[in-house]
Image (cartoon, rainbow, N blue to C red; front, side):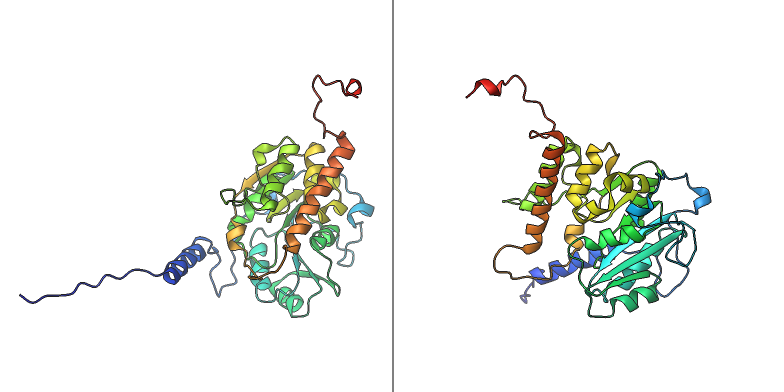
Length: 318
């Protein structure tokens, strides 16, 4: 009898990783057919939707008055999508196109700041209204600038480097239209790692201090998230530059804050710097933002952040 050799093939690590990447891309594939201009709008027209809550607008605070930036056009769209961008020419086109698919009555604002590439031109060709700043606005500064120029009843914030399909952006807009003031990404960070990343811990801790442990790690630091016009009025545009502070003001201000839809931005966000000596500067900024939020809470509600001291009589313990 002739002997035959059985060859067993095992998938190596690179093949497994490649297969996972393909599956992830398929899972997040957009409903827009490539090469077509007939986009499918996820949210119906304004006439078919319930009216969103619209607070009394303060022109001085939010940077708007009866004269709009478009030469007297007073139309206020249902949705404003705000996208800060810095050197994102490779991805900004796809990000804008997905944002425009959410609903017909929408404006997409791309805040190009400190860019040295063709981000602004690509965004304009994709259909966005572009605000250009020669200097970089700093982390989250683009959100503040975009909100000041936005005219929509709902403000949706996302980033220029992650093309999230419209089907996964629309739930945040729909939540605000149904009464939510702050619609957060139901993303809590990798809590099973040992040790847990300090930024993930900070997000959970802030929600615990705010007596909103139900939110777990959901945070305005993460995209996507959406605000109602009334929510923006309560929070204040200047606070958007410090997202944890904005979140604290929203909760303590009595706004309806909910985690409404899960988008795994941790997996989708590309790691641009693989090797780094010393602490991550972005993580330090986010941690300092959380400290600023806690400082505001104690300044507003007292040194214990609004919690009681129970039966302690501290003036006797000297």
